[in-house]
Image (cartoon, rainbow, N blue to C red; front, side):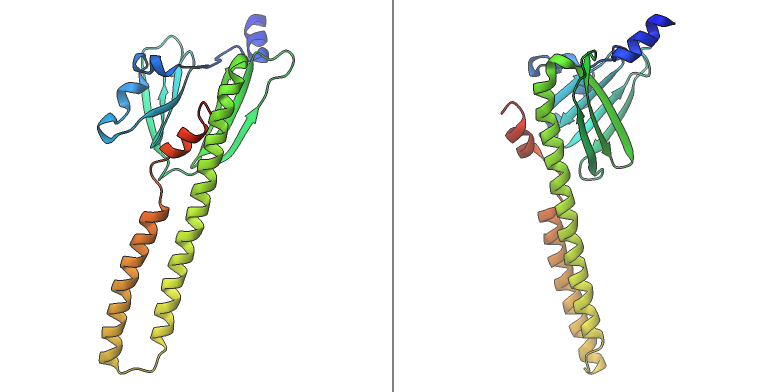
Length: 204
């Protein structure tokens, strides 16, 4: 009991190791990366029971349940569907053997312990996640502003004094144009691939 308590207190219970790119193909997570769609691993943390794989398109979590079980549960969190927020990096105290990176993917909280001597590499992941969070936050604002502009234009037209037949034709033309415009805005600001962010911050 005392050994377990001491292990938990020191952060030794399930400390993760940052895996070298040369060893990505030896991990379970690599089997679930969509290489066919140009998905690429940029960062991978492996603990006794879990793997946390950060690609240009998603976070892949291979949940091992516990260290002695061979059972695996795979969860995939695309950045385009799961907003990153609350990114926190906790450095180690004097007696700690690990550092922690915390963040949320949508409503799911993550708290990953990593070896203390790998803090410099973990800082790169921290900066990458922060930047992705900023980009997705700004993109959501732009898309919302575009939607509000289209709704306002339609509202103004509704109250314009125009013959009913002409109004219907104008309204249809406005909606068609607005839909195409909103689609182009969404394509521009609904980012799915964050490879450029990882390329900028990882190992730089």
